[in-house]
Amino acid sequence: MKRIFIICFVALLCTTASYAQKAKFGHVDYGAVMKDMPGIDTAQQALQAYQQELEAVGKQMADEFKTKQAEYANLANTSTSSAILKVKEDELTKLYQRLQDFVSSSEVDLQRKQVELLQPFQQKLLAAIKKVAEENKYTYIFDITLCAFHNDADDLTTAVRTELGIK
View 1: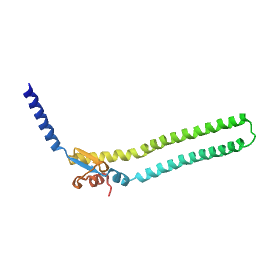
View 2: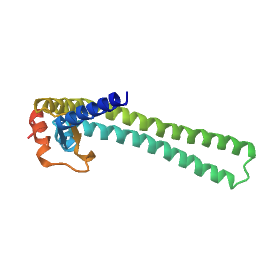
View 3: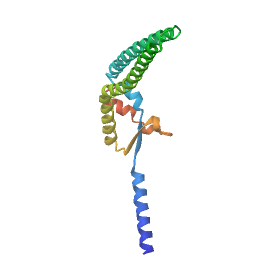
View 4: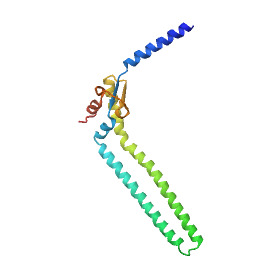
């Protein structure tokens, strides 16, 4: 029984070793190709404009909060009744919460917009990488930023650029 186990183990090692020798690895500079894709600059400009729009609304809300806070500070320094101060405090608290909610939701909205605008480019790039990998019989293609060491002979960036029509 022990012999059968050893024979199976050796056979498994031989099979794994022969498979590992057949694996072919390559790499692509994903970021460099992505930034050079036609139309990506338009998508990035649209994303930046959306971000600026959100920032403008956030700034307006923050300015309103600061103004109300200054008004409250002025009232607190006078002989204003505690009931009025309490109403103003509640107003400030609600305004601050609205500001915090806006910041949180705008971050989510910005990420959603980024996915919406950039996903078509990412899908196109991944399809090109897959096609180049299949044509050249590569088993794995890594982003160059994830590689601790790479051989320039296995750099498929130029081939992917050609596949996408990027010069």
